[in-house]
Image 1 (cartoon, rainbow, N blue to C red):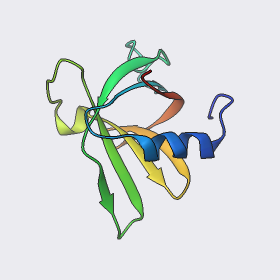
Image 2: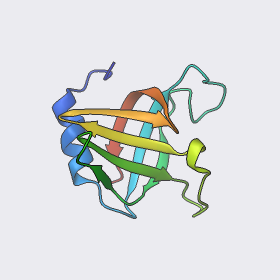
Image 3: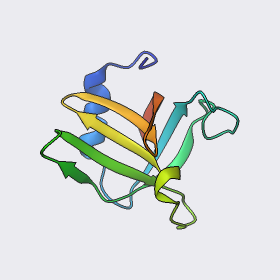
Length: 103
């Protein structure tokens, strides 16, 4: 599921993300008809982090580089529960293939 990386590696990268920073993310989805959902690394801008204390989840939205804001249900999210990092499109889970900081 994590394509050769350890969960703790992704958790460390997730913790290092700051709003406005660029990050390369590759995800796969059952709806993988486009380059975004086909496992190809794409560059995204990191949005504002939110935390749900009730459910123990940290969420970071990934925004397009052109500055447009996607509809809430078409938003790609990075989620962290404990030390596990995953991705979602709106409320649908996706497989996180890779996560790298922009150099």
